[in-house]
Length: 321
Image (cartoon, rainbow, N blue to C red):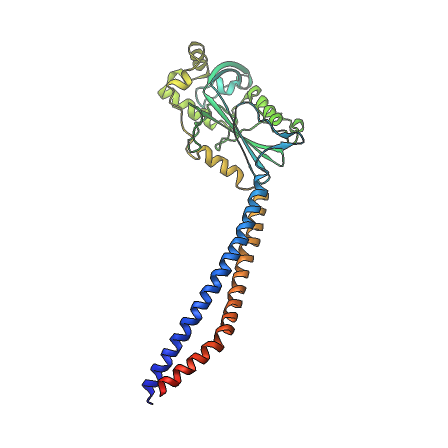
């Protein structure tokens, strides 16, 4: 028998053995994948239920009633988000002279005029507050205007025509804010306390970018809001003009949804849960996958080798004859 014929016979034998081995391995792996995937699917469900049990706010008496005007309550790990939306209203508000007696942020006035307190009854559009709590305690609050009720979190907030608000809409509550008065885990009390401080403070020329940018916009486009005096006069004439036809400036950075995501993204408990999930559901899964595939190969090799060897020997003898 020449070399070419021998090579052809060997190739045919190898092909036959490979096909048999492949069929056996595929059947074994299919059974393995079904078993392992069901196991890890059950683990994912357990984690999901464990986490979902924290989505509602509970105390010893059961679910907590949220404060009036609450539109959203959301929990992620140890962080909680509460969004309150207040309808258009007229509020008596206090402003320091630095905001009242100047036409722009660069105008100069005396110290007495700058620190004097002035009261204005102003019509406000919808006002949205986004509170963040960590471990049951107040951490931060954002403030934005809106000319209609919030319908989708993809909507862009409007710039608040107020001071003491940072460029990311975070509210500066000032040194007079007494955090010791906050009651841990009582979100309603904490939110009410924060808002009471916010509404009764005297707005100053600190963190006033939104205030001056909005005033400049209205000085050019809408004289009704070009100053606090004209704003008050128009509020007395028609308190709803602020939601009827005012062209408020939009906050260009984030939507309401983006703001909520950013407030939650640094939650340590959520990061810990992600790592636990990775350790148990990814690392362990792949380790088990690798081990079981190896075991399957060995088992299939043992079960197939003797049987296929006899058949290949018979085929080889038949071809040689």
